[in-house]
Length: 67
Image 1: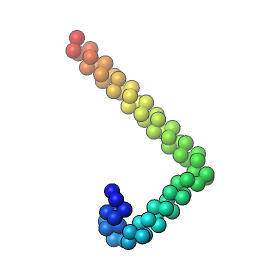
Image 2: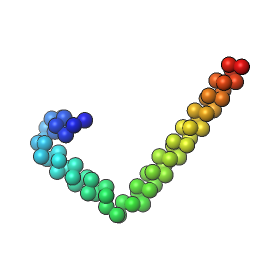
Image 3: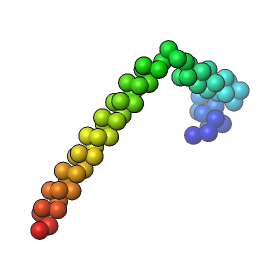
């Protein structure tokens, strides 16, 4: 979605969308949030590992049924 589309959808100016964006990025980059980001990335990694395990099991089951 573009900034223009967001502005139109929310009924605010393009300038205001840019202001909100810059403020959000500043907050996300704050060193205070480092631990939160690490936890998020660890969770995403665990989800990806579980998804890979599940896909491997499904492929193994499908492979066994084709023999």
